[in-house]
Length: 254
Figure 1: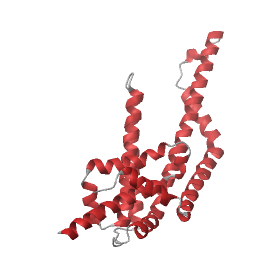
Figure 2: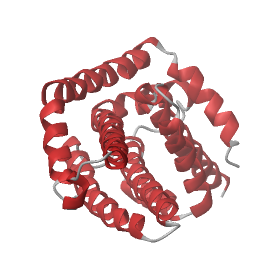
Figure 3: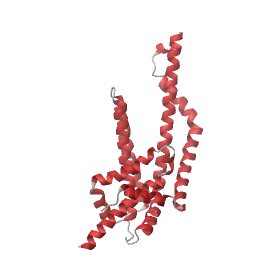
Figure 4: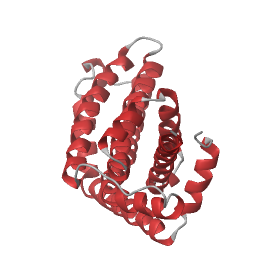
């Protein structure tokens, strides 16, 4: 029987504070923060000016008329536009760092998987499939697919009254599925044979999503979400190894 989510989460937290894993936590996150922070620092003002001028170009001419009431309205419009653009920059900054962390995780996931196997599941044989290049190609393919679906989801914001709710929910689902497919493949390809990965991935639908969703929700922990990708990998790794352990026990009992 698969241990409870809380049990595996506790094991993952203990492993998370291993010195080498903490190093894997800090370097990609700090690199992402410096990289995208630098991009916004260098090009942010130009991008803001371009977007604000472009959006203001769609405003009707009567907004340029004089008058106290009109000045107040113009102030509200400019404030709302600035707030929207800075919010957009913040969302871009967050997503860019999280995507950078996911890309880095492709390279260190095999280390985490092997560390967990040796420490907690030494009786399970070492196995893997695919290659680093295949993991990168899977990441790119999934990103392009789900980025396209995310752009389509933005159209839901145009639905009257409930558009904001529908759009936000759709984007949540799209990026969750991207996270699940990518991390499941990275961990699975580093921990087992492909046939076993396909079996685990296609069985216990709700259990798979429960663990994937629990790991994904860590992305919404303010600030700390920049540093939690290894913890997400650890949780999925422990889950996969417990499934493999269960499969081996059933096989040995026959």
